[in-house]
Length: 277
Image (cartoon, rainbow, N blue to C red):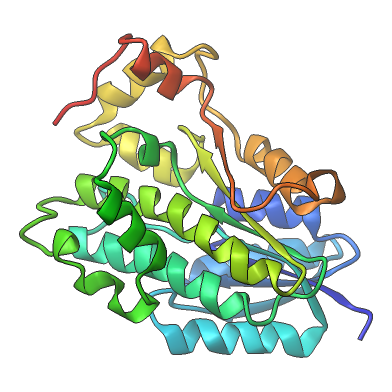
């Protein structure tokens, strides 16, 4: 089949921006857990001429992700896949965040690593939160990178006692994304494909607005004010980075993470702001 297929999981602001940018000339598969959000995003792209298929997916359910991967492969050559799905700390419990943001990404990498076409590329949308906490012990890093997917959430340092709140769960998950993508690049490379990570900073999406309105809002504003760019990012900023990592200009880039945060992490390391415990 000559049809190229683009899969975007998670159709919030970032997912929709990537779909708009990468979708022309491809069969676009949009997937999300929220059926109302999914239907709205699919209708919007369909109205302006995109070839769209919408499928509900639960990234914390391996069978659901496997079914999505198979459906995408049935449409043509799966050449671009992007996983933007995630829960923020104000949206869910620690265990729910680990199930979606950590385990869900590992499942995505494994299942789509079995259908990605030669010459194809994938992206996981992670977060600058993966850079905020102190380095993990080397054995923890190794376990997050290489533990079999279905044993990941059984790691002792991911237990409810060891991860007492959703903020810590979120940071651990995003660190795990970086490590897991690095490990997956080896198996994806065996198929002649690449996979990378993007770690956005504060992006103007409904999720970020929810965070800004929550108890951590003042901290978010401090991050923005002390950063080099002194602004929030936009979904199109992330889509531009995704276009590079999905395209031929990045053919020598795989297993990497691209931090696009406007300088927030640089400001943290310079002591312009501090991370609350």
